[in-house]
Amino acid sequence: MPNNFAKILVVDDNRQVLEQVNHILAEEGFDISFIPKGEFLFQRLDRQDFDLVLLDVNLPGISGYDLLKEIRKHPKYHNLPVIIITGEDEDTTLTKCFDLGAQDYIRKPINHLVLKVRVSSVISASRFHLNQIKNERDEALQARMNMLSSQMNPHFIFNALSSIQEFILSNETDKAIDYVSEFAGLMRQNLENSLVPYITLVEELRFLETYLKLERTRFNNSFDFEIILEIDEFQDIMVPPMIIQPYLENAIIHGLRKVDRMGKLTLSLKEQDDRVHCIITDNGIGRKQAEKNNPKKYKSIAMSNIEARLELLNIDARMKEFKVEIEDLYENDAPAGTIVLLCFPNDLH
Image (cartoon, rainbow, N blue to C red; front, side, top):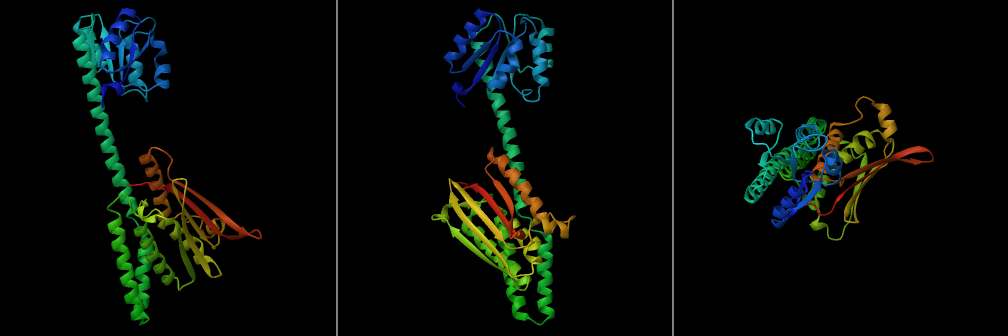
């Protein structure tokens, strides 16, 4: 990263030193700021991000040593690079600086070349270290998201296999063969999709349609479903795999399965304000009744996974890009189902 993006805060009450440091480092493209007293340090750090602090040992009021101790104890700034400026020439002084956590030191009178080299070296080393930490964090984050995205509810897998067994025992060979074929295809899609952070919306909808067909068959066609796509250039839309399926599963298991009428599940996708709006509507029993029916097990494994994934995706995006809202529907004051609004960016790649 070029020097002109590096911001340095100089803490020194000596005007001659300030002018000298500014003259040397500003010519190298560094952005230099000054404060004359240590008492102002954390106020300034809270207002602006800095890549390095040049800290004089002999400050009025709180000393540079004590200030360095405070920096290293601060949860937000304990990794902030600090170079000590000192007029003392004793080895014990320099040892103390390093023991307190300084990255380097510069003796007065300040040598131009030494100042430039040591400042550049400390900033480069700090950025390299931070980049390594970021890469390791991103890899761990991606591994965690991949693991969660590959996990389908084990109850679905177990029940799907049970359905196959029932078809066979009932001599419904054709149904068993069709179900096995669809189930195997779904598992293959799930495995392939879990290997990448994003898949096309087309691939996701293909996966969801297969899943919904299997669930409808498993529940003896007690519900119907519809997928409505209202996005013009949907071929360019990318989505995280298994981001929608848990909400469909939740609607089926906790809503539609318990209803005493023909179930209806609708998945509608729209594009608005550079975001994809995924709307899932069911005419099931609603969340309150579902919780009453099974208060201890109401939250499924799939829903727990998706909550963790959304949190990780928002951390990865550095902002709250992934958002979900769930509301109960009522008709004549009676529960009439649930609506889920899931929003995410339309420019994921």
